[in-house]
Length: 351
Image 1 (cartoon, rainbow, N blue to C red):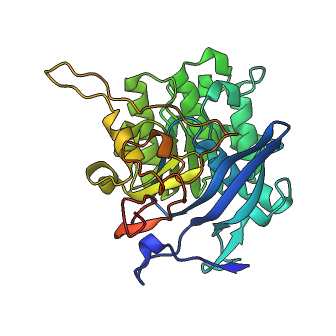
Image 2 (cartoon, one colour; image 1 turned 30 degrees about the horizontal axis):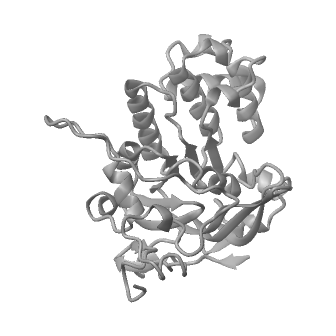
């Protein structure tokens, strides 16, 4: 067992221990064409009852970070360095001890006891997460019996109660429905019910509102917030939608090409962003104004995984690029205010 790492952003003595601490995590996919560096030295902390938002463009490593935490990487993906320190429920181990998930076997008994039971995962597309040839009730009951010591009759009653908890109308009748018979919003509610069957301490929500209309999206977010208040669980919200981040997150990690380039409380991200990439993401949010304005975009595209730039990974697209500095060295994370870190040569003495 290893001792809990204290978060640098929560260094006050009275701060509670982190529920989940990711330290210098690196995940690679060695393939014939080369080595894909999907996650490159990611670190963050998650506390009980907190929502951590992870934001960035597609291909920035958000989902691979989440799958690394779950130890559910597809081959040939593998964690090459770093720690995933988790403080499990119960009294053994004690509250000041942690388990390094990265050191466990992905298919081992200890990891299987944590995956799903203590750390739940909501997938991007619930249609692909459900079996199309089994009813949603069958799959929900299976999840309940996997994590709770109940018989079939009790599991069915719990399934109905869970569906009601996530506000699925006609809950008892929905048990006999197939996923393809439900709307996108209902499928996502059933997915949340399935995850909540084990009463997880950590919920990873990977683009939970993808392909949902605005009204349904708001309902799903309200539901997640309500469930969090009831259970005290921590949430990792993965999204490219800064509107979702503004509504849900307490703390935000901005990722670019596998690295966290800025992390800060949500108010600092929106009102005092530091990294040029964070600023560019915020400028690209559509605004309602009387005057007609072109939608701001970020120049260029995320580099190909096989041709990562030298130095700062964002420098080929950065409007504040400094030749000889940004393309020569990798900027370290620097504290710019309490709980606010940024990896950019515009700050500190790196420039």
